[in-house]
Length: 341
Ligand SMILES: [Zn+2]
Ligand SMILES: [Zn+2]
Image 1 (tube, protein in one colour):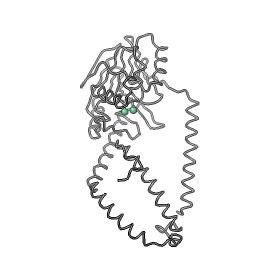
Image 2 (cartoon, rainbow, N blue to C red):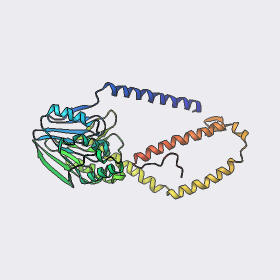
Image 3 (tube, rainbow, N blue to C red):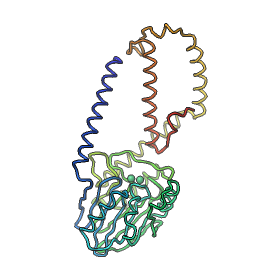
Image 4 (cartoon, rainbow, N blue to C red):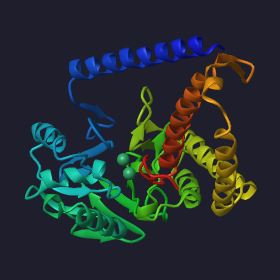
């Protein structure tokens, strides 16, 4: 492909993305901000921004699983007040991430208890301290280690901990009678997940956790996902759990194989330094006139040399961007783009 065509195609793609984004924004404006879907007569989900919220309107009080953000949680609270006269009995956090727990603050003075895994509470406290927003938190006043169960209304609500996965404090919240399990961010439907290494995440144990979720519950169980890709449901069945587990296994296998086959960071950096010296040596031998000469790069790009060099710069920017996306997808925070090692 000629560079001009290549550039034209790239511009078209950019234009398409711009149009698509505008359409998405228009849809967001047109649609109501939030959505409630009932799964049974008294259990439903609330979606707006951040992790999926589940609520249970029992005759013994309202139970809410996850709280999204401080600006969205009040929408849920208002709506539930319209649907039930009961007090807010229990707020459960599947884990500490801000898109699941920062809305807790909206329940301050309203809910009787906040419950999460003990590591989730520790993580929430640590992150709030780091971000200096401790005054904007409502922390759990109850925690559990491996399993916690309570009869509420006609339901038995159980929290299970199967070990580190998305973080080291992910609870699976089971509503036994309704046969519904809120997976929090243990389930991303058709979406690459965030792996929070700083909070003790484990990719390999995540696969085990999904296996356990598959075998502990049954084929009629409905699982609530924290997140789903655009166009996909947040309610899934155990086949979807299996699919996500297989995906994580493949990502892990690929990464491990690459590390095994690859060189150490030191080896690569040493090679880089050696090559740079060679390049500098030859580069200084090129006269200015030669930059105007036409050169056929890779048998495809027939342009003056200086344009080919600009292509290299573009190419580096492009691949750096890809590298950053890849690192973030693995839960690694890359260095600032202006830092060179
Ligand atoms: Zn989330
Ligand atoms: Zn999360």
